[in-house]
Image (cartoon, rainbow, N blue to C red; front, top):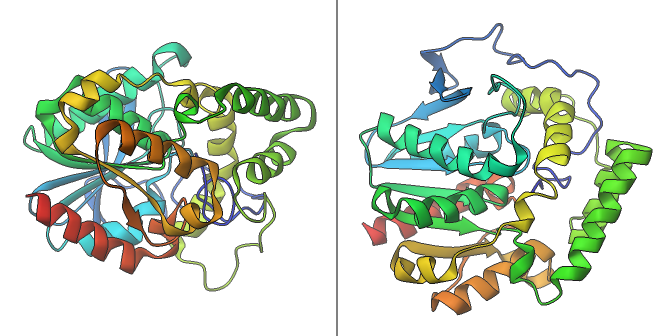
Length: 315
């Protein structure tokens, strides 16, 4: 699920450039240093994953949420690269991680999990620390359910799982209404409706990116409309309908860290609420992080410090 000024982990300006290449870095470059990260295109079954790798040490894999773009993690990843090998990537189907054929919505979560498995295998086979946010937290929960031996710690940050809410049917209806708006009025009105529904401030209206915007964020904005459209078509309804296997998760509860943003809790934002249920069912405390749904983008220094301490304590 998106956030960071808009409901998508992005400044919510309607972008005027839909290019998929890395703006500010020239043409696509792989296996070279770009902003301190080794950038590569990693082939997996049915797709090519855009990956960024920083640092050295135990493996820390970040699984991005609904905007599908690893740039939202760049500030946190750079700081944690002092102690970890940090891998961020664009999930399959989003900009820079093209799929080979039609998108299989019914099996996308499973495909995302197998992509994470392949990335962990490529970096030594684990067990790895995994941080997933929003849709990425759903992928992370399914990863630790299916492959608990590959995960040492799974930090699941605000997974928007409707089944874990007190009123799931009402949320299914809300999401159906938002998707109907998307079909009739387009992406941006639907995003505004979505932001209002889940409690993200500003809907889809935010100041335009301009002078002073970091190059990686400017490049992310250029990819935003394509990424948001892909999310709306293939993830917005499908991922929140995920059915977690709570019995299987209880068996590996010591690996799972339910997490959310302090602002999300204080405002009662929808993506925080499933964390409360999940933590209660697993008998786990909630790890509270700075900021809201995308505190890692808004407060990268404080967020990285807290995440680093949490992961170091679990090692």
